[in-house]
Length: 259
Ligand SMILES: [Zn+2]
View 1 (cartoon, protein in one colour):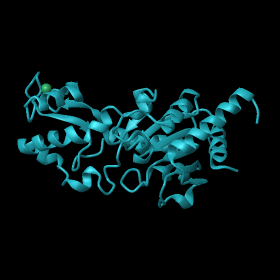
View 2 (cartoon, rainbow, N blue to C red):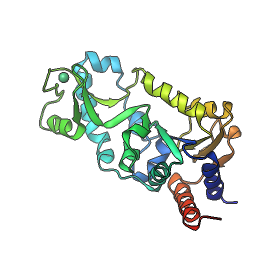
View 3 (cartoon, rainbow, N blue to C red):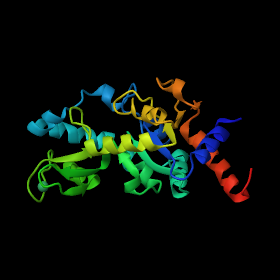
View 4 (cartoon, rainbow, N blue to C red):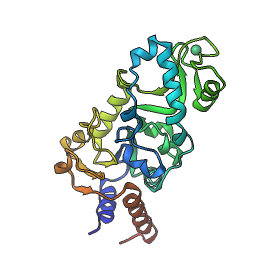
C-alpha cells in the first residue's frame, strides 16, 4: 500500500474532527521559505537578538528591523503549496479539527484556514504590535517606515516599542497557545506531523500526548525523528507531494462514495 493510501485511511478512520495536524518548517520549504535553523539559514549567520536586549537597547531594535528587511522578503509574498492546500481541504471537509504550527509564515491561513483553526506556537511574522498599547500594524507598513529612515520606528499612537508578533529568543512561549495545543493533542484520534523534526519544546512532546491517550501518530518528515518508533506511518516524501497525492485519493473516495 502506498503511503498516500495509508495516510488517507488514517484520516478517514480518525473520523470527523479527529485529526490534529502539527506542522514545522518542512511544510513550507516548497513555498520558498528557508528553514531559519538550517545551515545557511538566517539564524546560523547572525547571533540571535534576545528579547530582553530588544526591549532595553534601541540599537538592537535597529539591528532587528534591518535584518527583518532581508529575512521577511521571501515570506511577504510566499504562496501556500499543495501540502497547505490539502490540510485546508481536510479542515473544510471536517476531518481536521485544528492545525498547530511552529511556523510564523501564515501560510495555513493563506491556504484558507480561519485564524481560529491555527495555533501559532511561535507567533506570526506578518504583523507588528505595540508593546505599550497593543495596537496592531501590517508589517509591510512598518518596514516602509524603516526603509524611509526611521531605524527604530515607534508606535504612532503612544510612542511605545514596536515588535513583530513573533516569539523571540528569550521570550516565553505563549501559555494559552501551548495549553490549547496540549488539549488538542490529548484528545485527537490522529496526530499528523508534517515537516517537523520535533526537536524543540513543545514540539518534542506534543505528539506523544496523542499516543499516550490512545490515538495514532503519522509523521511526514524528510529526516528521522525521535518519535518514529511510535508512529503508524513514517513517510520521507516531500510534504507537498505526499499530502497532494493523499488529497487526490480522498477526493476520489468522496466522489465515488466507495473504494
Ligand atoms: Zn502604542
